[in-house]
Amino acid sequence: MVTIPGSGINSPSFWSTFQRVTFTLGRSVNQHFLLGKTAAIQQWRSEGRAAVWLHVPILQSRFIAPAAALGFSFHHAEADSSTLTLWLGQGPSRLPGYATHQVGVAGAVFDESTRKILVVQDRNKLKNMWKFPGGLSEPGEDIGDTAVREVFEETGIRSEFRSLLSIRQQHSHPGAFGKSDMYIICRLKPRSFTIELCPHECLRCEWMDLTDLAKAADTTPVTSRAARLLLYGHREGFEKIDLTMDQLPAVYTGLFYKLYHRQLPDSYKMMTGVD
Amino acid sequence: MVTIPGSGINSPSFWSTFQRVTFTLGRSVNQHFLLGKTAAIQQWRSEGRAAVWLHVPILQSRFIAPAAALGFSFHHAEADSSTLTLWLGQGPSRLPGYATHQVGVAGAVFDESTRKILVVQDRNKLKNMWKFPGGLSEPGEDIGDTAVREVFEETGIRSEFRSLLSIRQQHSHPGAFGKSDMYIICRLKPRSFTIELCPHECLRCEWMDLTDLAKAADTTPVTSRAARLLLYGHREGFEKIDLTMDQLPAVYTGLFYKLYHRQLPDSYKMMTGVD
Image (cartoon, rainbow over the protein chains, first blue to last red):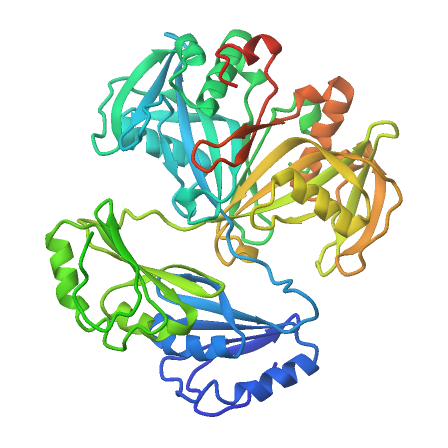
C-alpha cells in the first residue's frame, strides 16, 4: 500500500501491486491534486516502482493535460473514462499495451446439396467484387456468432457455424484506425434459402455455384482461396479443410473460451483425461 | 464541406464525408470553441449527418469534459491524443468500434530428430504448469514473428516459423483490460538448442519428450491439446495439423497481409490465376 502525498483527494481508490501505483480520480478531487505529484513521482522512482496508472472519469478530464505535463500519456480510453500511464522503470516501457486488433468475420454459407454458395457485392466500393457476407465482431462476441449474425443482417439467410477456414492478419488497416485487422472466414451451413437483401449494405446477393466462384475473376483473393478450399473439402471431405471448435473452461475468469484447430483422431483425444 | 459555426478556431482541420463531421482541435483553439456547438449539433442532426468525430491532442484535454457535457464520449485514446464521437443518427450508434482484441502468440518449438519440445514454467503463477514460451504481439507484428521473438526472449532458443496450429478466443480477459484475447500457437523449427533462461519471466525451461507433454497432468489444457496435435502430426505428417502461411498484396494499403489456412493441393492452387 502506498500513501499518495497531496491533499484534497476526496475518494480516490489507490493501491499498489507488482511495484505499480494506481489511482482513480474521484468526482470531487481538488484542482491541486496533481501539484504535489512531482515529488511523489521522484520518490516512487527511487523506490523502484515501475509505473503509475491514472484512471480519469471523462468529466474529470481537466486533469489530463496537467498529468501529460508530468509525463503521463494515454494508455486507452473508452466511453466515459480514460487511463493514463507513466513508466518509471529503466529503459523503454514494458507496460502491456491495449487491444491491437479488430476482428472481422465472414460467413461462407455453403449448401452441399446444390453446391451453391452465398455471395454478396458491397455497396460503396469502387470495384464490385463477389465476397462472403461479414463484418466486425461486437465486443465479447464469439467468431462463429459474428459470422451467423452478419450473414443474417446482410442477406436474411439463417445459418449455423460449422468450422473456421482461414485467418488473415493485416496491419495498419485503414478501417481500423491504424490498428491491425484479423479477418476470419467460417464455414456455415444454411438453415434458410430465401435471400432478403439489406439494401444499406449490399448491392447484390446470390447463391452462386461454388465452381464458378472458385474460377471467378471478379472476387477478392481471399474469397477465391476460400472457394477453392471449400471445393476441395466438398470433393474430398470437409475434415481436410476445417478447423473445428471446442469450448473449454477458463482458469482465471470462470468463463468459457473457444479453441479452434484441426480435428484430432479419437485415439489422440483422451491421452491425458484433462479435456 | 461543412462550415462549423463558432469563432476563435485557429487551425482546426475539418471535413465531412459519408455524412460525418470531423474536426481536430488545433494548438491554440479558443476556450469558447465548444460554446457554439449546441446549435451546430442540432443543425447537423437535422441535415441527416450521422456522427461527429472530435480529435483532441492530450494538451488540449480541457475540452473533453465540455464535449462530454454535449454528449460526446471516448472512442479511443493512445499516447498523446484522444478521439471522441457523438452519434447523431437514428437508434443506437452504428459507428465502427475500436480494436477489441489483444493477440498473444506461443511458439511450440519441436525438434523432429529427437522428438523433444521446448516448454517453460512461468514465474509469478500460483500453480506451475508446463506451457510453450510466448507473449503479446507488438503493434504491427506478424503472428510468426511474435512467436520467434518471444521464444528467443524467454529461452534463448532461435527458431523459425513453420505453421499455425490453434487459435483460442477468450472474452473479458483479466490481462487485457476487459477486452478479448486471441491466443495462437505456432509450430516452430529450432535453429539452436542451448537454453538460456530469462530469469525475469521463466522459472524453468527444458526440452521435454513430446509424448510426456501430451500425457502430462501439470500443463494447461491448450498446451496439452497442442502437444497431442503435434504428436499426431509427427507420426502421420504435419500436413494433417498445419495451417500454412501465404503472403498476399493488400488492395487498399499497398502493404502485404498474411493468410493462414490448410494447405491446398497443387491442383486447387491455380484455378483462377489470381493468386
